[in-house]
Length: 129
Image 1 (tube, rainbow, N blue to C red):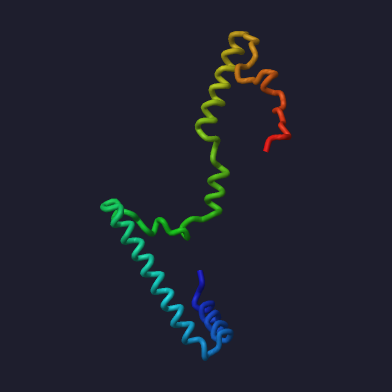
Image 2: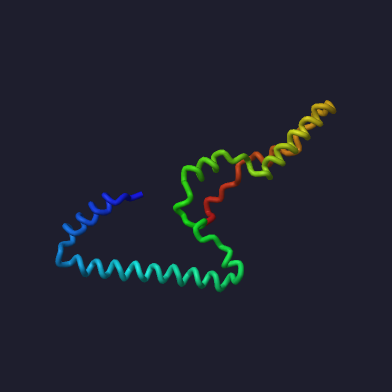
């Protein structure tokens, strides 16, 4: 966060760069911009609440603040994620099938293994666009 000293230093730098004769005009423009931004946010919040009805009143707007999300935590959680459930289930099914074949003594090829036609390289058509 920016503390009070940093704000004062920034204001002094802006006053020097902009100059005292243009500073009031820029300050008025900044104030008008801030007012329009607040009105826009208030308007958007009212529209969402009107569209959603009772559900819109239950929305916790502070929970949607992007400053609450820590990118490091998001990346860490994404890296820690296991395989998607669908992949885990298919892997578990393959393990069970392999265990059954091992118990029964069957030497049949894996049903999921591609045949020779499936392993051939794809045909390349150099005239296709």
